Amino acid sequence: MSTPPETISLYHITHVQNLARIARDGLLSDAAVRVRGGPSVSIGMPANKERRLSIPVRCHAGDFLGDYVPFNFCPRSVMLYILGMGNHPDIEYRDGQEPLVHLEFDLDAVVEWAASEGRRWAFTSVNASAAYATFYDDLELLDEISWAAVASNDFGRASGNIESKQAEFLVRDGVPWELVNRVGVASKRTQALALAAMADLDQRPDVSVIPHWYF
Image (cartoon, rainbow, N blue to C red):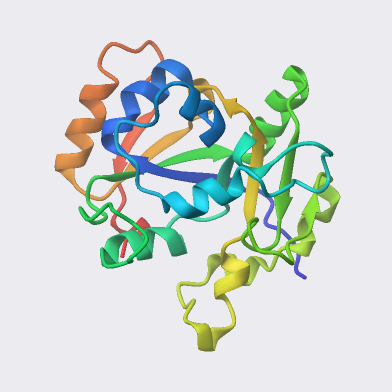
């Protein structure tokens, strides 16, 4: 669809109260988190998380979406907007955007780590749970993603961007905390909570207040 940028970052949103566990165990797939009793605070759609446990990752036979950690290719994702609105009938979480943090990763570093560990990965040009999603495991095919839609802040239905903005990158099982480049937050309050969660760590990525990553 379009030429990818030279440097590609990946983003995963979570509640600040989950940071301590992620720092300890790594950023894990939903299937792996379930085995450990679930997150401290769940912000997803329970029905969608359940469904993803049985949606195949079609470029890796026998694997399912729930086995993979999902990333967006941009901050300010569609899911963040939904969580910020706080009125979706299928989401119990109602505390808005302010306690949510973005974990930022470098795509090349993640792929290099995955190769060294024998971890499978994939990406899609739309929401990976969509029935029509195509799965890719070749970085030469990143031009299948609509990078203009990914970068756009206009993703109303009329814009035509909403499906393409939800392109996903997926890593089997999980990724280590050491790959986090930066933690983006909405406020100084959440910044303080994030720093407190990382106080005892040897690896402490920068925690920055980045308002334009939020709505």
